[in-house]
Amino acid sequence: MHVPLRKGTPLGEYENLIESCGGRVDLVLVHHSLGLRVTKWPELRRRLVNGRPVTVRTDEARTNRDHATWLERRNDDENRDWLRPAVHASTLFLTGSRDVLASASTQFEFAAGRGLREENVPKGHSVLVSMLSWELRPDPSVHRMQFDICFKAHPPYEHFRRPGRRLPAA
Image (cartoon, rainbow, N blue to C red):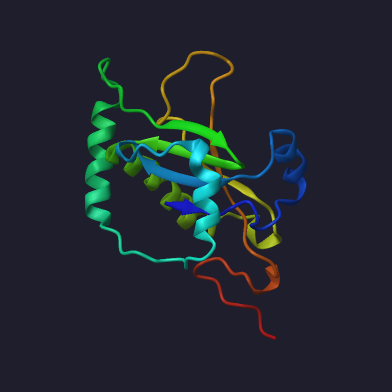
């Protein structure tokens, strides 16, 4: 799954921090069995331009079951099923099995639903909503990789309303 994020809503005060970390990236979630080589991604991405975005139905019950299965195995010493990140051609690749990708997708789902409810979103601020720490291989180092999931509403913000709130009278 390819999610083009590089040209999304500007993040305002966080833009300089993001630029210092290498810039904004697109996101690709890919099952490890597909064997996608990240070096082939630029060619594949060029071919995606002629396609059209597709919305697919999801099976939330199956995703929740797979997420629960992964959570049960997460702390097992034998577990080798971690989300494997790689960055290439301005794209963050998250590769793994169905279970760990289901776990990551629940974090994205949570961020999409919870981000709307955060207090500073109607003011145009970016808010930290979730992260992908538990899905990454444990690393006691202070240099441990972490992926934060933030939410920011599209402008114009005067048309944005949090769920359960009415738009102001015009």
